[in-house]
Amino acid sequence: MSKIKLLRYLANLGYGSRRDVLAMFADGRISDAAGEALYGDDVRDHDDIRIDGAVLDPAPGLLLMLNKPTGYTCSTKDQGRLIYDLLPRRFRQRDPVVSPVGRLDRDTSGLLLMTDDGTLLHRIIAPKSKLPKVYRARLANDLRGDEGVAFAAGTLMLEGEKTPLLPAELEVLSAREARLTLHEGRYHQVRRMFAAVGNHVDALHRERMGGLDLGDLPEGEWRLLGDGDRALLFSR
Image (cartoon, rainbow, N blue to C red; front, top):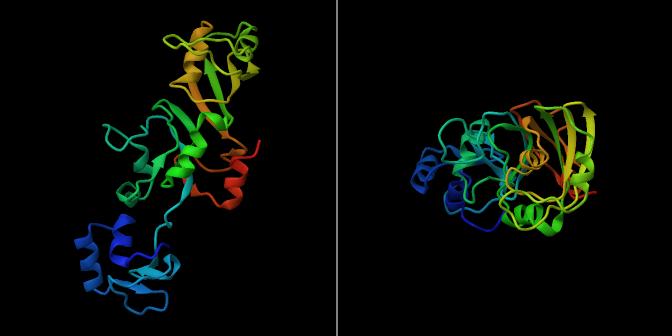
């Protein structure tokens, strides 16, 4: 925890405005781990702070994995169901906010990373990282058999773009299902790639980023990622 006073620290964690948090102090709701009352100008380690006897939400610099269902939008403001509906409500109020690392469109499910660490976010999405992302696609039409060659060539152009795609690897799973590994992240890239070879994606699921997969995380659930997970993310 940085050396900032508890009043500001708790407000930044999303527990309310400074006025709201000040009222919590006045009501004696904020204490240390031993139960001693704390005050707004105190400075304490994150793990030594309790609110109503409960430990705090994760400290700043968090990274989490969400198994995103279809029907949810990666936004704080759009209408309808949002990914933030699947997280603790305060996560949307944090400063800095817990943001998605890249996006999955509303009709795409699977592995979504979220963080409040801007440096980490940019490290993951930076084009030079070429972090592999693995998708499983269910298609409207049978595969012809030449899609893998087209995707691997490094010459495929998407409509409206001027730079060819980086080579991508296609694994055929069945006549209408395939696994595709990308090393970049363009807008609706998987759907547009299959459209470029005359097919249509009916369902899309992200299985893996870097060396990190969903494991047994249920759909709609999330978990914090530790140092080991972070190292796995950047492994090849």
